[in-house]
Length: 444
Image (cartoon, rainbow, N blue to C red; front, side, top):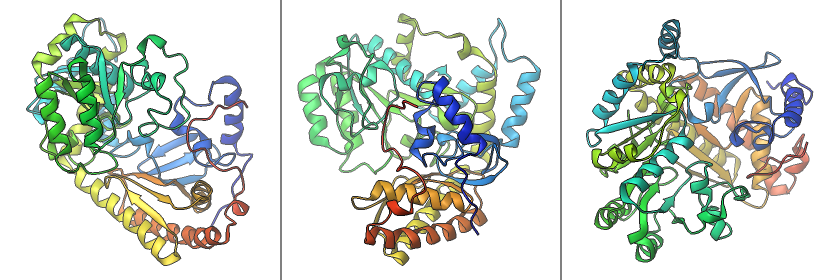
């Protein structure tokens, strides 16, 4: 059973107004309706609970897409986390004095990561990555940073595109120009690609003695090969470079803590955000004492890093995540979704590729009409009551019945898409424009 899509729904109307009031329409590029289903995506929610979402028109959807952009690892409005937060609010969320919960959270994070000795807190991933880079520069007295992966929107990272056109295309959405980034940062960022040891060795050969840090995601879309992480760890140690693992996305997916704990390689600093607060803003920079102590040489300070709600939410989230063995569930759900994609492709004859770690899975259609096919997939799934795209971020709240219903809908959607791809008529089935593949300026 399908439901008609409404281009004049309350969410779409509000979004049209938002684009005249908010540059870019939304605060987060990943939430722009144009990234999913232009002119038809519901855009705003009135309520979210478990794995379900209600739009402004009261329509209910099962979220099988980005699920809070990876932040709600337990599920929307988790009752245990929300109850802890309500208690914290009743006691006052801000004060001239410090919240004791931040000390409890520091102890818990260090218990989970015995290699680390000290913790600083932020409230989101981008600012915390900037904090980690600042600490590494303060600790080493060096300026340059080698990067591998996506690490946020701040100047230090986008500076990679000042020197070489498209330097971040393998790491970041295409089309993001470094407008507004000071030209004085030219040459401070040196990119290399994951599992490309030749590129990393070239970075070390040319910049090793001037690198303050190697900043990388320990894993995201693919497994490390040929001792990739171990060789990077050795080079960092040999050259006196701070190794920073960006676990903003990968943390709390396959275990309770950093994914690096399962990989046998220890960084000097690790950064967490997203999942650790289950939707409440919270982030942490943890590291070795001799590196973290350098934070006292620099001015790293913010009023709202001291509020009470974030640490309270993180404590409740991490404890429940550990006690419920949530990671096992996330892995299992993710694997089932991958199987659903592969089965639907095989049955329909569609050509796709599937990748990503199980709890953060993705697939892509092959061929020149891939972007239109992605848009059609979202359209067909939305008609069937699912928020869906070609990526899936698992939540503890997802159930077997929900995955079964999703799998059935995926098969139905692929049965439409596969012949349309072969006949070159995918675009004719779309009820709106093709989705954006990267950054695009919105003029209206």
